[in-house]
Every structure is written in C-alpha cells, then in structure tokens.
Amino acid sequence: MKVLVVEDEPKVASFLKQGLEEQQNEVTVVYDGLFAKKMAMENTYDAIILDIMIPYLNGMEVTRELRAEGIKSPILMLTALSAVDEKVNGLDAGADDYLVKPFDFKELLARLRALSKRYTDNMVEQKVLRVEDLELDLDRKVARRGGKTIDLTAKEFSLL
Image 1: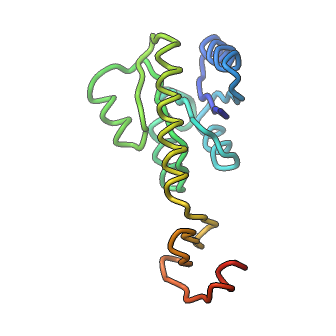
Image 2: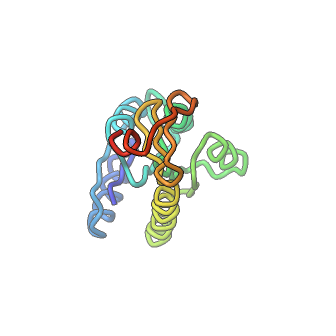
C-alpha cells in the first residue's frame, strides 16, 4: 500500500513510518496540513493517516478540502481527541475511520487493511474512468462531460 502519514510529532511519525514500512508499505510522512493537502492532490494514496492537531490546516480542514476536491483515498484520523463529538466531527468531515491515541499497532494495521479493501473493491465495482469533468462508464458504454451524456457510436467510445 502507498500510505500518506500526516503527523507533527516526530517520534510518532517515525514509529508509524517504520512500522508501516516493515509491513511492506510505501510511506510518505508530512508534518503539516498544507503539505498534506499538496501531497494528496498530487499523488494517489491507498490510505491517508491523518492527525487532527497539526500546523497550518488542521486534520478536519484537510479532510474537508480533500473531499471537496474529489480525493477518494480512505482517511484514517489518528488523534488524541477521544470525545464522542470529536469522533463524529471527524467522520462527518469525510474521514472513513477514527482511531484514538494511544493505539495498538495491530489494530491500526487491521483498520488500514479494511479501508484499503473497501476502497479497492469500490474502485473495481465502479468501472468508471474520470479525467476532470469527463467520465467514461465502461460497463454501460456511456460518456459524460460536466454531467451531460455525450452520444457516441461504439467506435467513438472505444477510441475515447
């Protein structure tokens, strides 16, 4: 898996990076919300592990902005904020899961596997290719741009 870890505490970030790499994951670590957003917009990640209390943009803001930009990568919020309202806010902001620090690393790995499986299964089920506002539904052989269907012959669709 390709994982983006967003954590401003160097010891925690190092622990996560080392543990995830030992499990054959490719890990990128960033320490603030602005850089997290930039990396997530420029790269595709199988999962994003995101602390809430980070500099510049907090984890809630990063999540909202990524979802608004159409980034679908699963987001696991990993934070010391344990109140039920905080968990609800994180999930409502667009996170897929929420884990409170301190945590057991085996549980983190299990949650990442579950998120990754759902994400990949969902991508396989859809069979829709997207580039900006152009969509190609490979099952139905339908093309849409800006939400409007484009009438194409079978040959035109296959060329597109």
